[in-house]
Length: 219
Image 1 (cartoon, one colour):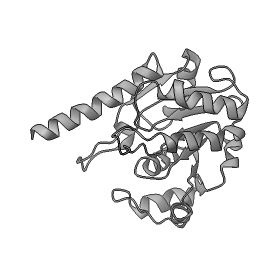
Image 2 (cartoon, one colour):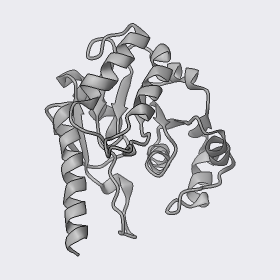
Image 3 (tube, helix red, strand yellow):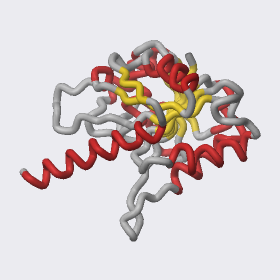
Image 4 (spheres, one colour):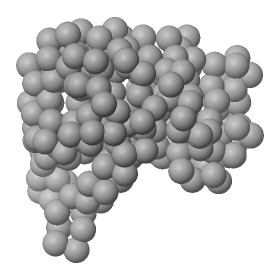
């Protein structure tokens, strides 16, 4: 399966490597030419990702990186792993997500799975991302392409953490969207946790982050 990872940061790059290890053909996409060039040279810029791991997947021919977003036409699934920093009012800045949506929309092929992984508030996938994708592509989410939310998962502080073993929550816009997303993520992740909507999946990520923040504060 041809899978695209948008955003080659601390979430996207490990995910790209994991999918490549699992046998998928992975295209990493980023607007940052320096990151793309580093990936294609096999030079890791992420602390917990070794250059050896990156080079091993490049040598298989299953991993490539580009700034050419028109290549999304080649893909069966695209996973959006861009930042959502807080703005000056301590609200999530969705500009990275929405700019990505505007960029990829004209290139979406029918039947593609679009998964948002960025941390955000419930309703973002349906109320913010979906309209931009539909307007730019002329396709209808849940009919012509499959839209899901599956929050990025990290296990910070665990030196033995393995991305494939961290359970992955997935919520789809429709039941068929969910099933298609399960087909994608099951390639690389051992345990999937399907939920009944994108909003529930978005809420699970906020709950996880709040739980961590409270426990760190208590410590």
